[in-house]
Length: 89
Picture 1: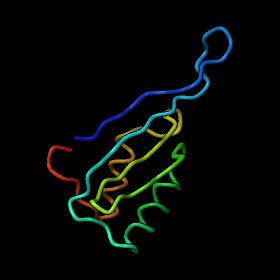
Picture 2: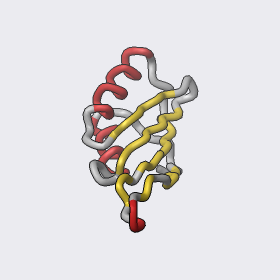
Picture 3: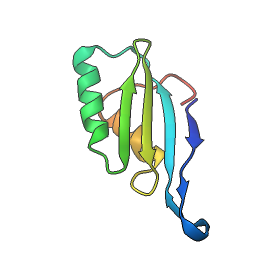
């Protein structure tokens, strides 16, 4: 299961200026160096994505601004690139 954490800044009068979120995915097969570079490059190209990291165990962390991209769009991009998510995601 992926998890999303909410954060963000509020401007004057309580107006939300940014919606910083983090989401985590578990890749079925731990990505190799080449795959990791491809995944980072492609996800970084999505509007609103601010950070992508892939751990050795296949844990993928994506920080993003929800005004530019939705979690489902990130998930779809991962799958379009041929990466399988562990069951339950």
